Structure formats: structure tokens, C-alpha cells
Image (cartoon, rainbow, N blue to C red; front, side, top):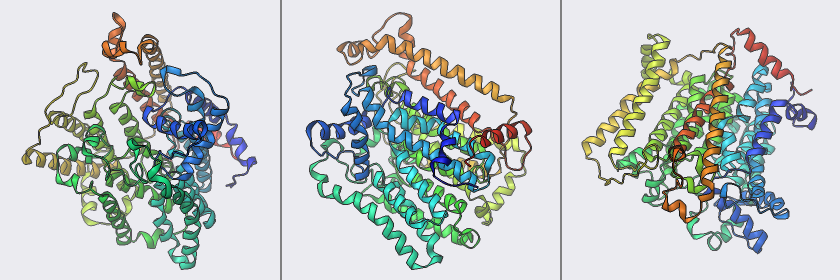
Length: 616
């Protein structure tokens, strides 16, 4: 078994045809698209340094993020181009080089997942799991289209877990500190490492903390001394804005028009006390800390520490996944790109049998769908297309389902521990009497019913329907719901959610027939082809008018005739096609044999796939 990071081990992986194909796709689309707000802030930081010689740290992240940004911007400065594709305010080279660290990090995440599967003895899963992350719609979209660098911090968090279980504790701590210096979220894993080191004594703990503190402190101290006189006024949220303290300096009206990915957006819309108690003065940190402590109490109560507290990658990864899920549930503003933090750890859990296929598909699909429920694909082409397909009501309902999916995944990961508690065991035994098909039908129908009820209720309460397919905006008065209706909504949450939670652990992953791959591949190709054709038609027709006064006069659709209807509804059409491609693509990537089964043809394909890139 080889777990080396040497070039001889990495070269066969890098030169594998599907890895090269994914790299080509990422590098091709990176210069074409961008998230307008985020990319504006990133490019401004580098432009101030290179063109004005001024240090303007306005992106709200630690020092290493700044160094990474200005370092990779240098080629764009050296070979300045004047090509502004799709009318965006960023040149091709700016988008390409700013996204390069994220694309490289995604490649290394895929490789580390490959090595971890080898380490766990799951050779036949090694390359499929790596390819699942490499071609995952979320990782590809966030790094190559959106332009965020979450994967850079995530690769250091993943490397830290990997090297910790290899016995290289100092290296693990340094990597965790560097990850913290890029984007703060890896620090929430620090208590886990301390707990897993507890039996080795205080000396090992002190050594780990010291090794972590040096790179972490080096990323904080320079910023804290100059932060207040260098941040832009419109983005001066403070040091921890998009990681650990996002709400205390953000107004209520901002949250109203920027719904988050948690069910607390729903509570906010209903002006309930349950929301406000966690959104003032950083009290969400307190809530996160309480849930964190309750999680450790749960592990102690179920004797998890006695059975599984070992320096192996499975228990540590299991707990790391849980910590990120707790974060998602406790904070009121969770951006879809945050899902990249947990995705590699969930992929490690899948081949071990801890996470069933339907749960992984669900939690992977919702953040991608959420992006296009809140803003259509055209927002990433040019921000002036932002009204093509927007609906805040859909986004809030989708965010509520994301919270539920976090609960489902948590109970799936800790199914054995949960079933040691008598109430949960009785509920599990009750639903186990039903046939698997009926349980799956109840599970899906409960999710759909919650989505529809929330969608209708939220819009009735004054959420604006923006854009299309409803081709006009409705500005309703924002009334405060009576207490009785609030209680009905909360009762809905307290009844339907546990129903789905109780059903979820009993669902069994069924590996589909290999012949279905052809049908899904056909749907994937058809959806992507249709998306490409429709997008090209809309862009060819409307790009000349974007960023001009004509676009305002014609209501963002400056064309007449047959193409007007296509352009008006282009956002929702292209979003639907991308979601179809996403779900079929994820399902294709998940066609993995369940451990212990005998799908001969599938096993042969996957075994052959893994052997081609096994490092020697």
C-alpha cells in the first residue's frame, strides 16, 4: 500500500485520462465566468497592490488568503490583456489566474481522497471517489465558475487529518494552521485533534497547539494591526465575516434580501424569537459552542470514545463531518460554497458504509440547486442578468431542506450510537416494519411536502417573487404573522422533520443496473447540449445591450419576436437544465458497488479503473 506524496506516486494519477479531462474542462471555463461581487473584491485587492502600490486588505480573510491572491494575480499583471468576455468587468487572465489556486487544490483533494481509499483498503473505490470529487458539480462550479477559494483551506484541513492519522502530528498541526490562515473554518477541527491526543498526554497536546499557533498567529497579527484603516467601507464586516461571525454586523434588511442556507431563514421570515436569540452580538458562536459540547456529551454517553477513540482515519473523519454539520445547523448565514468544506470527509465515509447513497446524493444536490434557485446561471456570466430566474421564496425553501439534509446525514453517520438510545431505537423498529419501497416513498413525499408548504407560506408572508417564469415582480406588504400561524409552521417542522429523520436510517442503498448508465449518460449529454445551445442564443442576442441604457428601457430583455420569450425565461430554463445535468451526473458518479455485493460488470470496470493509476 502506497501513501506517498512523491512525484513517482502522483504522476500516474495526474496523467490518467479522466483527471486530464477534468483539468482541461476546469481551465477552459475558468476565464469565462465569475461571481460578480466576490470576484470584484478579489481583483480589487490585487489591483491596488500592483497598479497603485497600496496594501488594501478588504476581502475579510487572514493573511495567507491575501498572499495567495496577489501571488497568483502576478501573471495577469505581467501579461495584461484587454479581453472582457461576456461584458464582465474582469479580463480573461484575471479570472483564470485568480481561480488557479482553487483548481489546483481540488486536484490535490482528489488525490488525497485516492490515497485515503488505498489506506483504508478500499482500492476499488479509490479512483471513483477521487473522480466523484474532481467532477462534482459543486467543486467544479465553486472553483471554476464562481471563483471562491474554499477548496484551498479544505485541502489543508484534509491533509491535516490524513497526516495526523499517519503519526506526523507536527506537520498535521502546521497544515491546520495554514488552512486557518487561508479561511478560518479549519479551526473548528482543533478540539477534535486535542480529544484524540488526550490519551497520549499533555506534552503531545502542547506540541500540537504550538505547531498550530505559529502559522495561525502569523496569519492574524499583521491584519489586526491595519484592518481598520484599509478595509473598504462597504465590506468592513470585521475579521471573521464569512467564516465564524457573519451576522453581528449585518443588518436585518441585508438578511431579508440575502436568505441563507439554513432553516433559520424561515424563522427569520416569521419574526420568531428562536431566530433572533441567535443573531445578535455573535451569539451564534455561543449556540455553536453549546451544540459542540452536546456532541461530545453524546459521544461520551454512547461510549463512542471507549470503542472508537483511536488514531485512525475513520473515527476522526466521522467526527470532523459531524462538526461541520453542527456548524451548518447553528449559524444563520451559510453560503452554498461552504459545502466544499465537508464534501471530502463525506466521501471518505461513503465507501465505509457509514453514509448511504441517497443521503449523500441529497446533501450534495441541494447546495447546487440552491445556487440556481436564488440566482440563475446568467448571474455568473454578467451580474446584469441577475433577474433572469430569481426567486427568494424558492431559495428559503431550499435552504430549509439543506438544514434537514444535515440532520439526516448526522443521524446516518452515527446510526449505531443513536440506536443505543431507547426512544430512537423504538422509532427505528417501528419504521423497519414497513417495506423499503414504502419507506423511501414516505421519505421523498415528506421532503416535497415540506418544500411546497414553506414555499407557499413564505411567499404569502411577503417574500418577493423576482424575475421569471413569473414575468413581473410582486411587492407585497410584509405583515407579521399571527402567533397562531407561527406555531403551525413550527409544529410542521416538529412533526414532518422527525418523520423523515426516523425513516432515513432505514433506507437501503440499491445499486442500479449498469445498463441504466447509458440512459443517464444520454440525459446528461442532452441536458448539457440543450443548455449550451440555449445559453449561446440568449447571450448572442442580448450581450450587445448589456451595460447600456437600452437594457434598462427594455426591462433587461432588449429583443422582440420569437426570441423574446426565450430570453425572458432563459434563466429558469437554463437553471432547470443544469439541475437535471447535476442530478444525473451525480448519480452516474455514484454508480459504485456496495461493499460485499457482487455486481460483476460494475466491479470489473471499477477495479480496472483503479489499477491503472495505482502508484508503484
